[in-house]
Length: 481
Image (cartoon, rainbow, N blue to C red):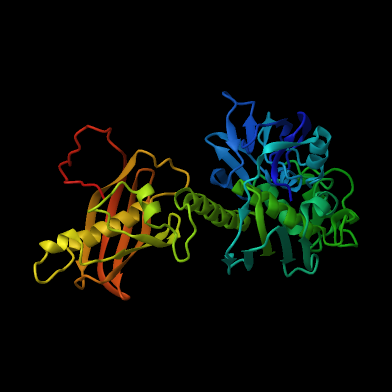
């Protein structure tokens, strides 16, 4: 696979109708500098707002993937994104004068053709690959969907579809090499739907630009001629319509025997492109769809953000560590004698964190708490949990420079057992709720697997005061965590 970023050499334009909105759009791909990523720009709107092709901006997944910021939105981006992934293009600006890309023939081929016409240009900056080094598994029992990412040193995708429908049957396909297979074997695979869905989709306000030239309609029920004509007239299909003897409406010929499965693979890699970085992983998917693809992509994006975050602070890999004491000092402002966490051993971004504090007889507070019977103050156990929770507030996107975490409340604090010198405290913090500047966490502290303390904590992220200013508590007695 390429190790350097790519853009296109020249602007190129594609014009056509959107499959769901029925709107005609002029779509222009433009070269972009290194590290720009993929950005859609609505030039028909005031200010020409840009929407990054990012999972964080997905707002709808009904029969396609829609991204939006405010009132600016772009529908059905998956075929465009799949073409960019297949050609390994990292940086491009896509100007659009309407809200949906042209559907073309229902595949990614029209986008591939114009992008190849524009020419591909290698850039100097290296690609930022996300290498999957652990199994990531998504499952939806209700829909029978399973998607898994497995570690490997390249990018592979295997798809299995089985709708328990004789008109489609069970199909599978595998892509092993983007360079050698995508353009010829997958870009031409067209979108499809079942005959029983057509009228329903139209009544939902979808497929306004759909016709038998840009979608495969799989016959899954018998209809009389009059009923078939009525449906065709309702959705604006002119000309003769027949059920077809090959299981496809109007006997349209499939480009591949397993074209529906290939198109599902196309959709999946288009949706996964919204992670924002190319993957090195083996993806296995059974019965995927846009809603499930996006949920899986969110899982992968969280993993990517976590890896970026860990590498930012933890400069040396250590077995059994996520963050060592040096990394913790890069994150937290606390210092001796008030730094009460020694290492982080588990971390799931925005979900949970596990920290460790080795309680030594040399701790300063044991001199007075209590002479002759040293017991760690419960308030310091809570403080250690809170410091660990402060690290949990890192999410990989916020700029943490000049920020501090302050307590706003401690509720339901309970102390189950005393903590003595020689004990090892294990803090487990779980995110309960997070908003832009505040969060709720539930913390537990264990010694030898036994619960010694727990509490609910409310914290706020605040700007660190300038050096030399006086810092005071407010009327609620807030203090730094």
